[in-house]
Image 1 (tube, rainbow over the protein chains, first blue to last red):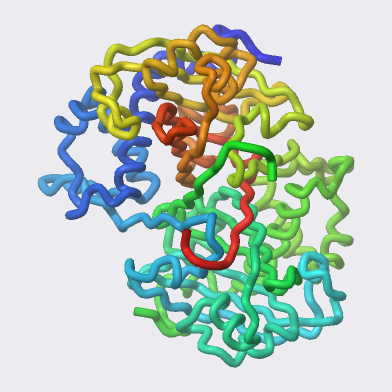
Image 2 (cartoon, chains in turn cyan, yellow; image 1 turned 180 degrees about the vertical axis):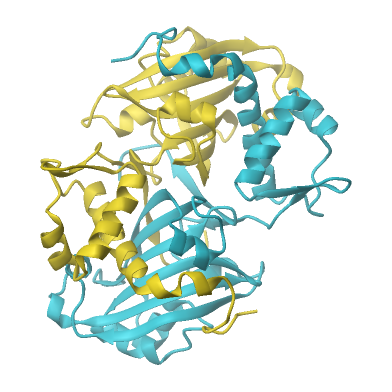
Length: 257
Length: 257
């Protein structure tokens, strides 16, 4: 199944630029990592000459890397000014179950533009199945566009079971995480969530809502959150601007859990 | 900072199609989740009429959802045949530190096309810093294109410290995970890794290597792996085809660790 390294085919049209593309990728990866780590506190990146020295790459490779990062929305370049971090990129831990406002406490203020907040008498079948209730049990449907300090960060679609959703619907949906509202209005603690992370490109409608170009990379998270007793109560689909957020995890070696 | 729901601006051009776009997104999310969960064992999706009933959406919304998923490379549609899963999409757990071949054991055979395997006398400065060694300590540089059952899955760039890399360079790089080779050749166990996950779009060179259209969504992982004693020895940048793999995690509520 494994083709030889010198296999012919689609490679013919790019092989000549391969070494520079590889170096550009390596520079882009290094810079993306440093931007996400908050390395450039004043928002200014070093000039091309210094980046070339720092990464052991040619100016051309550095320029290509900066083009890649500009395409990702991570940096902006202005002649006579230099290269700047466009917006800070935050890490969202996948280890601990926390809402967005909780996660970003200390970095900025999260506010929510409530697009939909309604009780529904029937759940979509695929959602009912995940929540392990009949379709006709109904529930609560929320759609919120979440803003961090004046620019949109994520578009969250949430379905809650009827009993849990009832109180949440009365809560401060514009100012609060759903997790906090669930715990407050039910008096019960959340337990765990299963998360599946996809990377997708933005469709035109999502792009307009999140104010990114159509085709920009997004995270699409499916998150099913359970109460402490194990019952699933909150099924979410979350689209996150990938230029503003990275996901972090710590992985441990050892037996499969 | 939070605009009113009826704020003017970029919304004017999409507001008329909003409800259908929202339903299409919801159908796409549901189907993506089911495809990733291996629901359609024979690879065939139900027809539009049945999907519309199942998701409580119009045929138009279903068609729009299928277009989104086709754009992601998840499905193919052929007139007279129907809608098929393009390639299985696998879950890669972010909880346990495992190589790709280990993770996919039982699903298929991973082979590696070795593009670069060399000892370097100087490490790139950004890598040396992450590995906590001087640039002139040198190390080992690997670039591998990883195939699963005849199609490319990821492009992995790896830098190993000199002591750990020496043995790995002699190992079966085409057939084995680097993690297994490290543990075998050093006689020491790996401990943990810090992972940062980005979503990006494919640059033309990466796209050609991974055989996806330029602009397709990819995961870009930065992973720093430590030996059991805590020393970082393996710094990787991994680009993964997002049409073939999703990332999974279980998150727990409770104190920040």
